[in-house]
Image 1 (cartoon, rainbow, N blue to C red):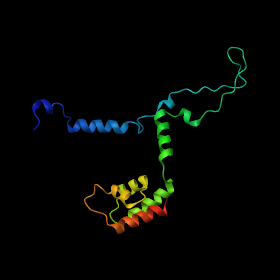
Image 2 (cartoon, rainbow, N blue to C red):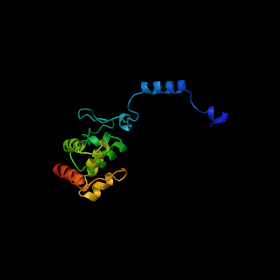
Image 3 (cartoon, one colour):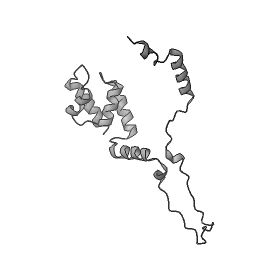
Image 4 (spheres, one colour):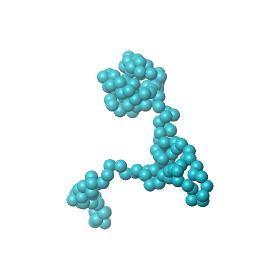
Length: 148
């Protein structure tokens, strides 16, 4: 049981409702990244430079240079560790969901890991209270190999 001191720190139902209503009014994106705040400088060829010299043409900018570090790191990670194309993954997930004992979580994890043998595939189902029969594993591996 909570004592008097602790109950003063807890929110009431009305306070929780007000906080939730406030949060629904906020924009969906919490972090826009610094790329929104960084002004871009474009050098025009016809405009003379302030010191009297000729204007130099700006080098072509990499489109990722305007993206924040976090977003660039995420894109780089996705490029390096992608094992299957999006369309193939979606069709594989649909086929896996048709099999017994394969939930959406399992299908997504299998698409992420793309296991090559039964041992790797068993790790996806390691937390489950049931065991997967070798025939079921074989069916799953056939689906995976068909979409490789």
